[in-house]
Amino acid sequence: VRHDPGTALDYFVATGNLRTETGLDLQQLAGFTIVAERLNYFRFLAHFRSVHRGAFFTTLRTTAVRKLLPDQWGFICPVHTPDGSPCGLLSHLAEKCFAAIEVPNRAVLKQYLAPKLAA
Image 1 (tube, rainbow, N blue to C red):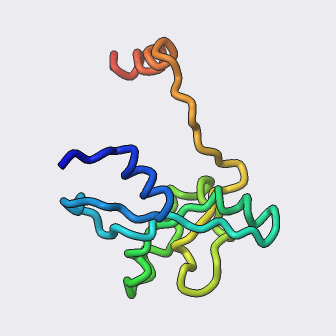
Image 2: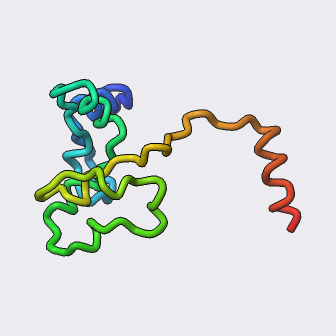
Image 3: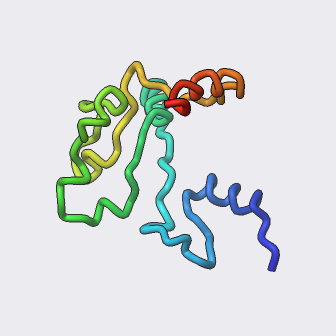
C-alpha cells in the first residue's frame, strides 16, 4: 500500500491526529492542534503564539512538566497560561519572542561557523 504524504499531512492539519501503522514511538497520536477561538480579535491572534506540551501530559499527576524551566525564560511567557487542568501545559510565546522562518544563506552560515570549527 502506497501512502501519500500530502494526504497524511492534510489529515493531520485538519484533525490534529496522526494516522500511522508503526506508532512512530510517540507518547500520543491525537490532540496536536488547538482550535482557534474567535471570541475576539486578540484571543484569535493569541492562539497562533500558543505552545502546547501535549495531551499526554494532562494525565500525569506531577507538577514538574507544568513548571517554567530556567532555559525557557524570555521565550515562554510566565503569566499567559490558562487556569485549571491545562495550566502550565498550554503556554504562549513571550512578547518579544518570534519563530524564525528564514534560513540564513550558506555564506553567512559558513562565516558564523568557521571560527567555532577552527577551535
